[in-house]
Amino acid sequence: MMIFKFGGASVRDVEAVRNVGLILDLFKDNELVVVVSAMGKTTNALEKVVASHLAADGRSLDLLNEVRAFHLDIMAGLFPDQGHPVYAAIENYLLEIEWVLDEEPRQPDFTYDQIVGFGELISTTIVSAYLNDSGTANRFVDIRDCLLTDNTYREARIDWKESERKTCEVISRMMESGNRVVVTQGFIAASSENFTTTLGREGSDYTAAILAHLLNAESVTIWKDVPGVLNADPKFYSDAQKLEQISYTDAIELAYYGASVIHPKTIKPLENKGIPLYVKSFLNPQGKGTVIGKDLQTKPQVPSFIFKNNQVLLSLSSRDFSFIAEDNLSDIFAQFASLGVRINLMQNSAISFSVCFDHEESRTENLIESLRSHYRVRYNSGVQLCTIRHYYPSTIDTIAQGNEVLLEQRSRTTAQLVLKPIQE
Ligand code: ASP
Ligand code: MG
Image (cartoon, rainbow, N blue to C red; front, side, top):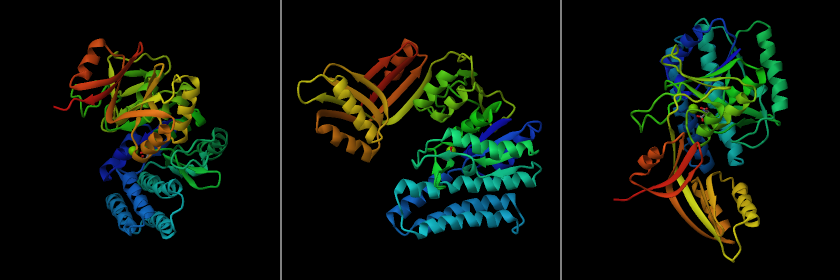
């Protein structure tokens, strides 16, 4: 059994959905679990619906109608018969969203998941119906019947044991009784009270990895609009190179520090079972792509660059004469953890401690305010974190050009720089 994941770009219009069918035709001998994300930029569009609902600005239904129109347009191309049952199915989902909008908003993260999760339900319903019509018989699975999480809305954590039991009960059984292809949603799951939860933005890769782990799949393939994993973002580097293969460790490090091709949580469930992950182009499905797997050395051994923008570099020193040692550090970490601020880089000396983290306005403000009660705080916002895996000394100099290097750290394999552009 193989797990395929198709992201938003791979189902963004009529032609893209047809192309999914063509790709599946290349794997007629395999059992496939096909994990699909919301179409195109639907998740962003639904986020706007949520924001409008929470702000009660009276625009949420108009915004939802844009989502409706986008999907109806794709459906018109795929299902010329206006009486096709898929139209009623999609209209039902939209109606369910309207019901949520009819009610007073509850806790924001909860409300978010109840609305945004429909993007995936809608896309998979369309894709599954299209595939059934075009010769790829498949079963639609509501992944909320398989994956169970805690109640941390927007960042839900998997209950591995229960999810394993349910996934086997639903998907394994379906396949054992002769169904070769299953189509299901990425990104969403269910809480123990049976509400929709989501696994964090771009979480469909993670869903594919979870299912691979639970079902002992032979591999996972993520179909993307790039030829594989590149060593730099081609938007900024015209000479970005494709990596043929990547070790699990390198993949985790690259994804964690912001390489946007793979969701950072994706690798671990695969590594634990030695399941390989392929990243391939949906525009060139026969191409080799990139493979991430067991006992693989990253090849070619070129430096990989990852940039994370919109960072804050914050330095703390104690107000009294105490050292920044265990006591203070544990207090500092507790404050970061309780405010949900994720640290990307840190460095300490006897009396000061510097950290670099993602800037999110309200979180950053709360954090600074809370730290100020005990520490002297200085910070720079709008800085960039550059991570270079397998660096050469000369690559660091190139990256530093035109920037002030506010902080630098090197290990044998990885260099990290906090950069601030030099204003001319
Ligand atoms: N549709 C979700 C998002 O855009 C999940 C995903 O695409 O992986 O974040
Ligand atoms: Mg996406």
